[in-house]
Amino acid sequence: MISLQFLLTALVVVVIPGTGVLYCVALGLGRGRRASVWAALGCTIGIVPHLAAATVGLAALLHASALAFQVVKLAGIAYLLWLAWQALRTGGALSVAPDAAPLSGPRIALRGALINILNPKLSVFFLALLPPFLSGDPGTATLEMAVLGGLFMALTFAVFVLYGALAARARDRVLQNPSALR
Image 1 (cartoon, helix red, strand yellow):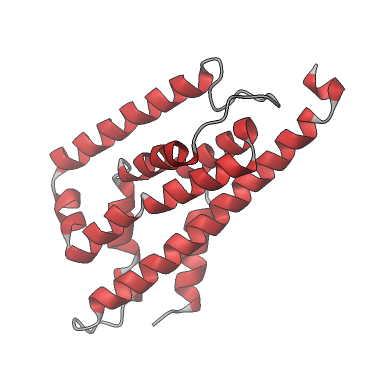
Image 2: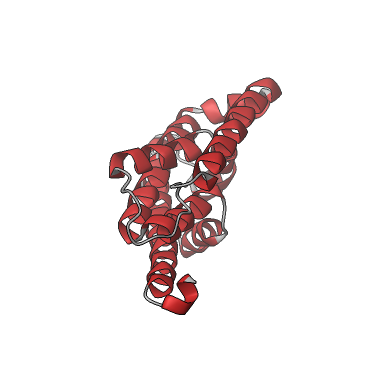
């Protein structure tokens, strides 16, 4: 059921930076490792509705309806613009300071989840990516989709945590270097 081709395809898709990676890196740079892990968790949880939609065929409806796709897309753009505004404000996610006010983990995760929930490309992605890796047996299709989706989510979480940890490490180096802080 699980092929090396699927794992490699999923890894390539996850490694390519998108909005979730940017969110994790921004939190890693601005708030540190803990915040970036919460961001990765939220982004990973935000995949669940798209996986569920693809599994029950709703993604096909979203793909077929240009209006529904555009509405979700515009809502996602509006949300990303709002997040960017919040990040650029004083004390936002990109504020690199050792004493930055902490953001709650669940709030960071909620924002990450919303980033992925409002990304209609994920539904289309699952609709296009998962079926070629299924066995073709209608009796096991749902289970196979769930397993492949779960693997995709695990890869997403691991890669996003890695991106965030690298960003947090860069943040720590900057904060420990007085000349870099100036």
